[in-house]
Length: 132
Length: 140
Image 1: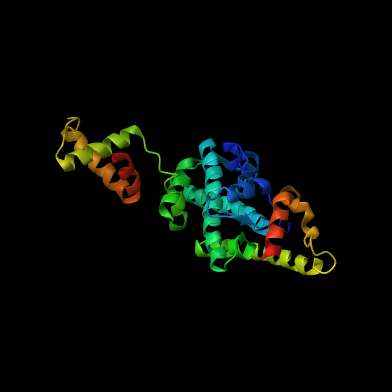
Image 2: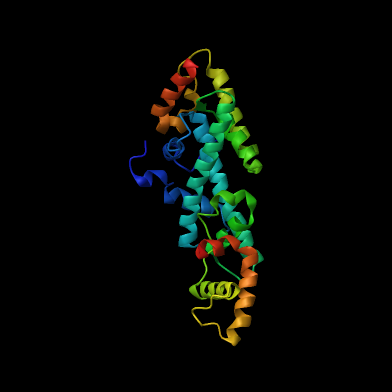
């Protein structure tokens, strides 16, 4: 959980990298603009999370699923993000289907490279889902 | 490329869980959210960049003001408006306040001479079309 206040901000280095990738090489970004973007992204995550949790409640679930986030984005007028994210979402579902039979508990070992960091919390969630 | 995110998933997960109306966060929703946040940053940067190119002058640096401008004018960024107000200079602020005082008939400061009258009218009428919220924030 959030122990320090900084834990609620996205790391500057990653944000800076994303900005650099987006802008043409000849263009720089001001310091205040960068920190504003970083804060805006955190607020965006909260904003979408809040809407996504409403979507989850609609389907009587307590755990936020990928589809909830997609629905939330659509609701909040960020439809343009849907296409790339739907591909991502679909790839999860495919890997889930494949891994279902041999290993029930670790259905998503395919994704290990990306999920290692959140393994602990993810395991809790898997149990939660199983209970549902 | 498929799903590699540049933002740390742990951090995104922490932010999501800090929301009071969330009980559990599935891991794929975290990954999708991280990717969405990345797309969001790019989108806002490019919108700000396009505003900058649309305006006068040749800028090499994307400044805060361009981001604030797009946030204030585009409805899908409404949730950021309180957080990213347009910055105005003290001079502009004084002009706006002088204009306000004139309208209310409370001219306590007495710093509105005839020559500055036309100035302040111009500036405040132009800024009030685009920056209503800022003005009201400052006057409150």
